[in-house]
Length: 95
Image (cartoon, one colour):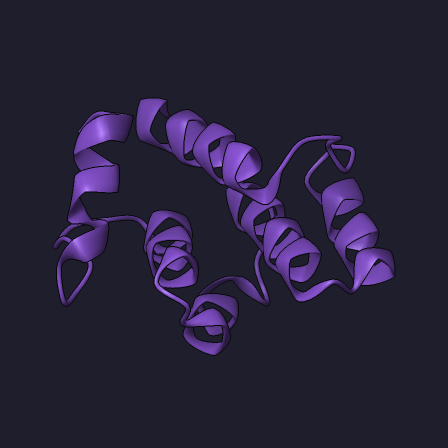
């Protein structure tokens, strides 16, 4: 699935079948379902930690976001939330 195809599903009532949990979490976050998105990634590392960091950035709790960026081996980006969402989604779709 391409990033454009993934973005096109955001108007669907449910996430596409077969998505990884980190991608499902991004889909939920894009649809304003932060709590559900957070529940999917809150205890895991790797790609999960990157999405977890993003979610705390969305929430505005930057100290917590920074912790999770560190767990993911990333730094908090200096870009819009939308740009970061697209960067993460693109990376996960290519993995």
